[in-house]
Amino acid sequence: MKTENPKMPAPLSGRGITRRGFIKGVGTGAAAAAVSGALSTAGPAESALLDSNEMHRVVLKVNGRAHTQLVEPRWTLLFVLREKMGMTGTKPGCERGECGACTVLIDGLPRYACMTLAVEAQGSDITTIEGLMHGEDLGPVQKAFLENDAFQCGYCTPGQIVAAEGLLRSNPKPSLHEIQQGMSGNLCRCGAYVHIFQAVEDAAKARGGK
Ligand code: FES
Ligand code: FES
Image 1 (tube, rainbow, N blue to C red):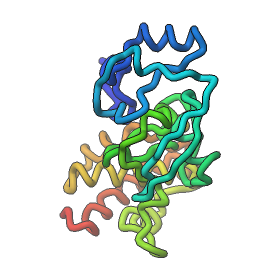
Image 2: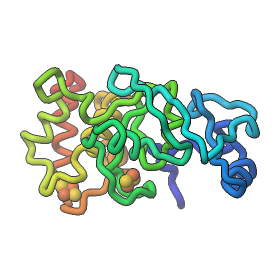
Image 3: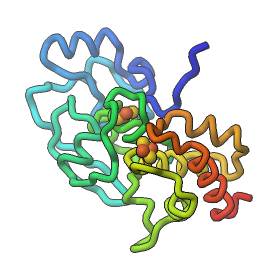
Image 4: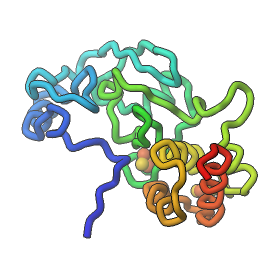
């Protein structure tokens, strides 16, 4: 049975954008995307079409700071974070919603930045791996990954840490099974899963969860 991956964005129809409108928009040179609050609110489908030939001004709230950017409607949040804002902690992997390397928190929930358009993320609170630092110090989840040796090459690690942070915000005392489920949208080619799950358990304890 196919299970829903919570890190994937909501279906287009759930965001005030019809699939028909999206296809029509792409076909006529316009990408469909709602400029404001698209991840959580619905609006008229046709008015959500943006001209893909034009740059659009968006204000992205990343790690508590507002950043004004000029973006093309087709640009992903992943692309804008890395290439326009220089926040390279968020990693590109598959760039099609399969690996989780690009995981960020959007309004506190883990989401794939490669599957989220930058224009959609306007109006939301975006947290990247950089935003989990406590000043110059590592945050509790970052520390737990370090102490548990929960990585080998480290490429998947920022996404794993952000996913773990999101999991612990919604479930401060996860069981091992809940950790495995919560982290299931983040793949590790090095197979460091046992250490990753232990790190999440330890981070839960460090955060006072258990
Ligand atoms: S890069 Fe986004 S899920 Fe793989
Ligand atoms: S540590 Fe290498 S991909 Fe996860």
